[in-house]
Image (cartoon, rainbow, N blue to C red; front, side, top):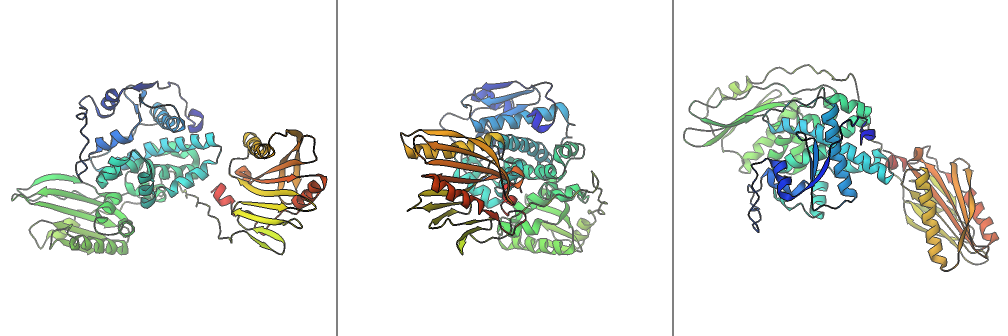
Length: 537
């Protein structure tokens, strides 16, 4: 982990397995009381609290006071647990080497922003370690993780995996507190890493993100766009304040989702510029709220205002609530006695927009590579054409083609010459170990097919295929016959994967025909095969 993260581990944290009671006391504090035996927590909308979900979701944690990593003692070592330990080791590296982040203020928005840097950093190292172990490019793993971060995809993933019952049943704010720093934090740190590696991630600890807007839109963070200061609304005389804080983009979106589809709420919350709210209870015991917000553009403000009015229509707001826009500013009051100067008082709380100051100079997050649209593989004029792989190959004379997928095809010849050939894509990094694995896997398939006959290795060599590049070819013969297997593994996309060209023949004539077939494989018009945008985004 130290090598991946680029931080010295001068004081390795001990790893301890502890029983459930010790685990939870360390996670929640000495005041933790175990639940009554056999009595599961209620699944009511507000019955599930943060510690309930953390108790369900957490299998390990780093204790900075004890500089130790604790795991539940019922765990067994496997790849998933090793990945989690990698995550926790990263927290110990943070504690040893990086500036300690200042405590966030009381708003959920600030807590989530700070924690997203910490947890996103650890998630990035965990992903890099897992990618190294699986021998796949980190960028590819990061791109595939991004596809899981969307609300629909995450919901589907949680439902498909056991052990998420409390998380799925928890209120939105609790779910966000648990998942946002990890999922969105990974995307935030991933974008920093793609822009400037872990060196840039390190620098972020000296100028950390301060709002969920930064996490949701990392380019705004790099551009130095900070929230507009908004002073906290003051509760009327005689009222008792319940809470005063900043909503931020994420909580604003979650509020709007109560009355509209998630995609609509997301659009309405984007363009958030700053806000402050106060919830209080009037002398008569009624709940009320005062909220002042500002937005990046007047169009953003108008979209948010329309969304606010939809809250009233679905019963999430008090009838007759104040909701007004002045330029880029929108103010809201609900549950209060109407006053002519209420809007003006709230508008006066919003200060001038600060000048943007990029914390690290002008930096732009590189766009993710995406493959251009291609047709499915097809046969045309006696040739197999695969636009996605960027390959054209002749169908051997008298042969047939079986197109298995967008990344595989097999050719069969029966009659005067009996032979099989195929093209496959290996998504593993093209390093010596994986090249050996690919060769070995095809050898094993043939060995199983021929049964008792021995398959003898006849040697390997470096080869060069015109316009495709250098590869490694290995040959085996079925003992006592002229039949054999030849496999050529050719790295592509800068080594992010390999083309695998395999040939199985019954005799010398079959080998000669398949050697000619191999020479027919050429690139299509693509200078860089579209598959490279997937193998190394």
